[in-house]
Amino acid sequence: MRTLATVGLVALLASCSSGATTGELLPTPFPGSVLSATPARRCSPIHCMATYRVRITNPTDSDANVQDCAVSPSLPGLGRLPVMGIAGLGIPAGATRATTARFLLPIGPAEVEAMAGRQLACTGIDWHGDAPI
Image 1 (cartoon, one colour):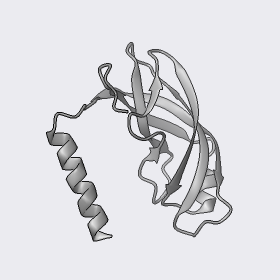
Image 2 (cartoon, helix red, strand yellow; image 1 turned 135 degrees about the vertical axis):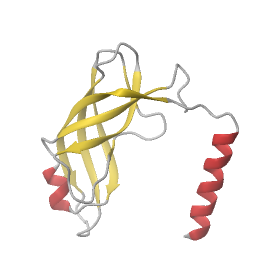
Image 3 (cartoon, rainbow, N blue to C red; image 1 turned 90 degrees about the horizontal axis):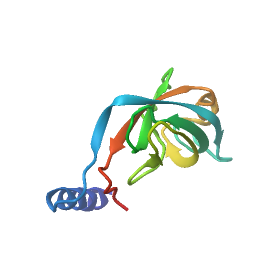
């Protein structure tokens, strides 16, 4: 496990120091909601593979991407809800997009089901036309 963490850290440092593309975090929150949330058949009380559908609006006048969101009201153990990795979910200026995500979350199956209907405050990222692949 320690070796895997070391390899990940080295890769991160190498990409950050090699002129890799970086995005600008936008100050305006992107509102959204969890439309549905379903836990996998087999979960533990402390983590669960979940499939959930979210809808997010880009209130800005430029195209942006969303990688994760804060859930409100918050769920104990869940910091931020991942939406899409790497570049994030692309949302055109002034548009609303829905997507289905599947991630291993640090919460149990009852909390996964309780996500449905919760509000989201998402962080927009402007890649300035150069999102990573």
